[in-house]
Image (cartoon, rainbow, N blue to C red; front, side, top):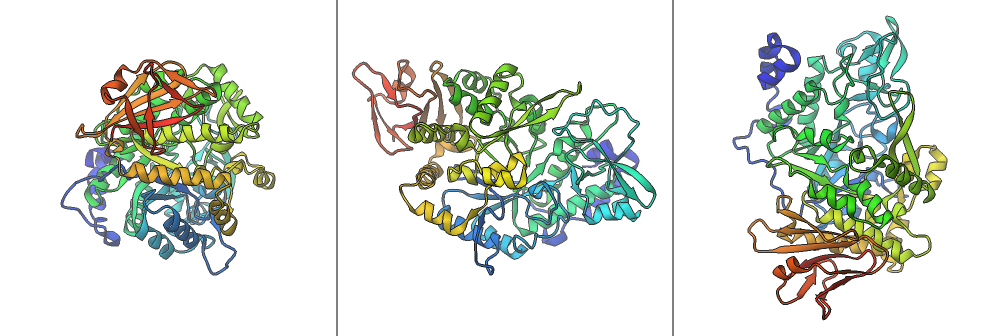
Length: 569
């Protein structure tokens, strides 16, 4: 840790800062651990991504967090292991990601007691928004008033400086003027005028966040999601993205956790091209997990185009993460589907075509500004269900959606499921009309009674999707071939089918995963490898629970968009 402190804050400060760091151990009852066993992950580990108020009660006495606990305990116990509660702190914009106070729960959501009670039933994931805070936060108020420590926490900029090299996901002004005690000052605002960037050159800011981390761990946080961490460190004359100091700070947090809470997982959120994204694994000494950001847009592209070609090629060349590190596999989250991770994988024309397809289905496309002043697609804003729906054939659309989910659940890594994927929620166009923000279409708030009635009615789409998910997740939890570290082998079966094999770590169980990406029936001819796994030409599909037989010619027929997880046991 001394070496990392020296790399960021200078050798002359390293010893003083290291001593200050050691003095934090034991705060909030989080002390040094005698063993570094690391996270004990298993096939049962699945993350549910949700807002605190995704399910809302008409009863004023029930807080949204308590309603969320009631819903998840009743319907998802044994199906998911971890609840990622998106920012539940007081906030002013960006649906939570403009934090006012990191140590408080928003009164609109409930209390820390509500959070703790949810943690009694599930493991918890918290967000740590490191790049910026709200312009209404105490830190920024201190900055405006010239009072420490907030005075040193905010990143200032000079409008006369050439900042054209800075890479960012927004087209709003990078610098925003604010009136302070010292007169007008320009502040970095990477994401919006209300989200003021933090100045990590201040060691006090580092220790502020280390204290917050300890507090979260004392509440029950098991996964720490570092939001927008790629933008953390700024240096004039660079693109201010993935700078060495950013990596050093993440590694320092990792080292600190190895002392006080070795079972806590660091997850970095860096929605950038794949090679940049996986740089946050470091050499196995940085993030424990990174989002598999290339997977969602590749699934959308492949299933909408009716080809597994690009997904198979990408997955075949996907390097495994360092030992003890994992991909977080997902299809949807509270944000849209980022398309920057497709750079270098799909031709630009295909990315533009995918964006057009989302618009045709009632979704939206968010743009980012390039260095030359032009704009390019950054994010597809739609629920994953709406993106893959078929207005002319509801059942076909459901099959296509379920196929996409089955891929993400089966691939090597830790699966994460967004609340609206569980329910097959369509685009919330009414919500968009109220906010005029693209991301709102994917952030519907369900009325508790309406949602429960839908899920209890077997004839509704939400009920059918939820039951499929519930059954599949519970089955998956007991299958050792889906352990996060169980081996995976991609198998090329042509342009129509995406296929891979998962083997349990002891080699006793194999699961052959097949996914038809076409709207037509597909027959698999190349079954030599399959026959080695299933010598009797019989297998059981773990998803449906049914027996699968080959035809007389040895071919296996897949229905349109059918997903199979084949096992011999």
